[in-house]
Image (cartoon, rainbow, N blue to C red; front, side, top):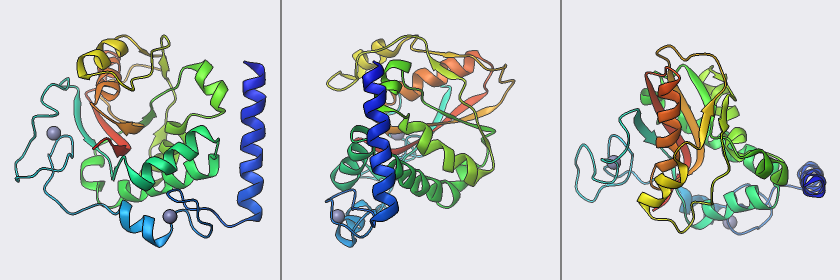
Length: 241
Ligand SMILES: [Zn+2]
Ligand SMILES: [Zn+2]
């Protein structure tokens, strides 16, 4: 584990040196010059389309709510995510997470913060504090950072809210990839614990990198509600299409 940690720090150091001496590379195609080149930027633009008022999923026919989020626990009030998890955004997040590109994760956080301050501001305005989805300590050591925390920090700054890291993994879980809706939610049951003070009716803004079925945010919402939160708003960088 210690070598993993060292390797992660070395990778991160290289990434820092690289961003200091070279212009950034496109998260989508790797071309040098910007965090997203013009072509990839075009691809990641948020489409103006009718969306579910609760989960923000695009809808073919305008309606207030979709079926997809009807099974969410009531504590998870709503979720917003500016990007679709495919193409350049998928590639950028992969580079940030698995190649230790710390600076790229922070850039994605700045983009998420820009949405939090503009398009999503009306629904995020009610939040009292910002909490990132935690990684299990062993995975955090291996990666060297928690991407959700790097996404959450600029959001908290932009909204003028405290970033609170008291949501913890109570146990390690299998990766959610390849699991269906039911299995995802079973896999995460009891996965988190709250180690901070009672939340006394607070509205918590929980930040994650990708939202798929909402199982992770739903489980976090249950944990935070039992710690006294009145409700949870989820904010993710991207949603699985
Ligand atoms: Zn590109
Ligand atoms: Zn929905």
